[in-house]
Image 1 (tube, helix red, strand yellow):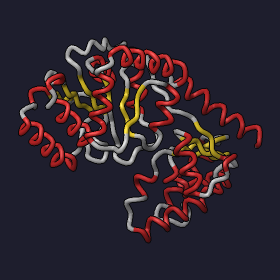
Image 2: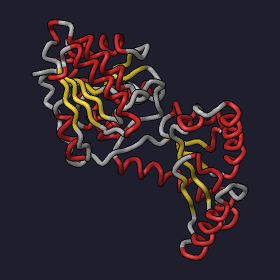
Image 3: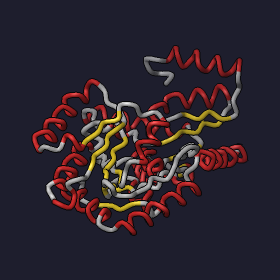
Image 4: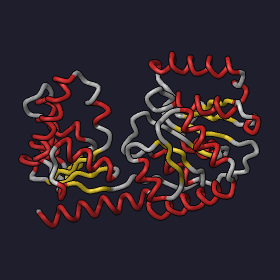
Length: 316
């Protein structure tokens, strides 16, 4: 903030907002920007809202002395914020503990997706297919999905099983992806794997229609995960580890199953059970789709956020 290395840029931002916009509310996209809040509030007279989602993924990998300093500073600067909006109850509670936030300041607003264009997947299981829709990275659980796929392929009943992957990757991910390819090729199943390099919305919609189940088993879990909404928008059940915000989402939607611990063996068992119960699979897909269209649209999310703004405005 005003005491940091970007103090001059903060000064420029405040001066511009004050002279050109004069907002009533400023909404920060994440808690890593809390250093902006004090000046925004004092100089603009605006209320400050801050979204919360997976800040720990950036902070916790730091060396302990820096990690503790950052969390302590964030807890201090949180006092300059009028309301926090968390992506799940799980993460609301986690952030409140970590940053010592009063419960009345933390609101839960689930994410939403523009659902125009999504079409129900046929779920014919002909052939059955596992999907992964996220950055193709070790920490996001791609290795767990690959291990589950290889275990299932060893069973005669799943010889036709397919694995579809999309979400892109960076240069840092290439060595890991290369290892995954080698592993699958060595097992003799590379011909049953397909990587979709295009993953804009039209391609994601086509991708989801080919799936029987989707799994993005982030190793330590995460606060939310929009890929879950997208899968259920297409009526594709999700299979997720019992970590982070996943249990909350699955309980709310009825569109998937949980497994633990988060490894290939237990993911394979959970997928196997679903694929062997096609009626349950399709019912889960229908229930999840209905729940997403009721509660996880972009418009619903906007209305819920606007409700938080209105509460703040009344206090002001």
